[in-house]
Amino acid sequence: MHGNLTALEAVLADIDSRGIELIYNLGDYVGKGPRGREVIDVCRQRCAVNIRGNWDDFLPDPGRTHDSEGLAWWLAQLGEGQGDWLRALPFSHDFLISGRRVRLFHASATSVHRRVRFDHDEREFLGMFANTPATGDGPAPSVVGYGDTHDPFYEVAGNGLTLFNTGSVGNSMNDPNPVYVIVEGRLGSDVPAPFSVQFVRVPYDAEAEIAVAARMGMPELDGFISEARHGVYRGAMHDPGAPRYHRRPA
Image (cartoon, rainbow, N blue to C red; front, top):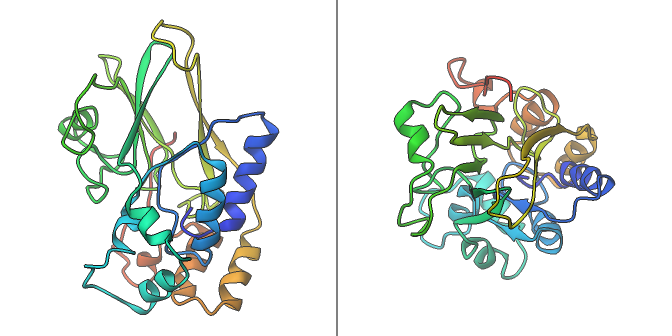
């Protein structure tokens, strides 16, 4: 979500129109966009499961030494107790559906700060399904969903292991429209049954959220405009060699 309340509301409206009641949130509520506090409030109310992202971990970290005008501003936007809530969120969440064990986390099986992009190698792919000190022990998943890189994709290996990235609601790259994933099957069942993963793009009023950010005097406004309006990573504005989040289709 990255503080983009308008994008979040558009996605929730689409979810509601489909009669979906169970929402899992894969993290990064804050930073980049102007309304992290409001996004947290909505997610606490609407999401059955909220997972910790890398921004949720480092932005309110009392031991964080790196700072900038933007980081200080986004931190100051948080309401009372919200920083503690973000840092206390679970690392991962497992559930059964149609005979498959699904594991959700933000970035990788080892850390919210360890990034696995769409152009990973086989070792990185298999590592996403491993039990680690961060995920804990128990049955290993056959399906893993994650976020972090803002690169929506779907990949199935020859052994049936399935990896998907949800993309981003509030900070989508290349195509700036929010994207989310619908996982469909028989929830809670360990019996094989039909199962699907669907990617949904939702149009929204990016200019409305940009106007809010400008009105609030948010730092790094040009970077937010580049990403919200054009889907171009803010780092590419100053470094032609920076990644622009090119990805293979989901």
